[in-house]
Image 1 (cartoon, helix red, strand yellow):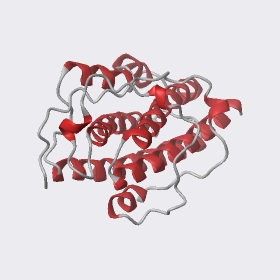
Image 2 (cartoon, rainbow, N blue to C red):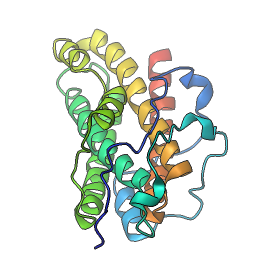
Image 3 (cartoon, rainbow, N blue to C red):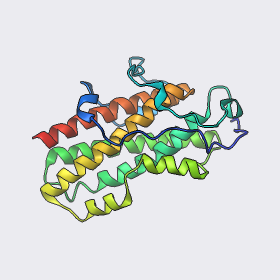
Length: 225
C-alpha cells in the first residue's frame, strides 16, 4: 500500500463538548450490532447509512496542516487521525464496559455494556487493519495529536472511581460517564464524515454515529427509570 509522505500529527480535529444536551441530540434509531465494522471494511454496509446533515463544518479545526501534503488518493490525514483516535477511544470503552458485569445491579445495563464492548472490539479489528495496510502507527505522533486524543477520552481518575464502586451507585455513575464517552465518539465520527475521504472509513464513521447515538438514548432511558 502507499505510504504517507508527511507526518500526520497536526490533522486538526477540534475537540467538542463531552456531553452537552445529549437528550435533545439523539433521535430515534437502531444501533448496529457487532460485526458491522467488518461490513464497513469490506464495503458491504447498507447504503442507507447516510451522513448526518445537522453538523456544522465550523466545528472542525483544520489547523495549519496542508491536506495536499498527505493526499494519497482515497485516503487523507483526517481518515488516519480518526482511526488512531477511535482505536484508543474504543479500547478505553471496552475497559469501562468490562467493569459492568461484576459491579452493576441492573441486567439492562449489563446487556448494554456487553453489546457495546462487542461492537467496539470488532471496530478496533477493522481500524487497526486499515492502519496496518497503510503503514501507519496505531497512535498518532506529536503533542497536538496527543492533546486532541486526551480530550476525547475519559480520565483515568474517572475509571479508577468506577472500579471502586458497585450496585446502584455504580450504575448511575457508569451511565453518566459512558454517555459522555460515547458522545465523544459521535463527535469524532461526524468530523470524519465531514472531512474524511476513504469510503470505508466514512462508512464506519456513519455506523459509529448511529450506534453510539442509539446507546446514548438507551442509557438516558436507564437513568430515567
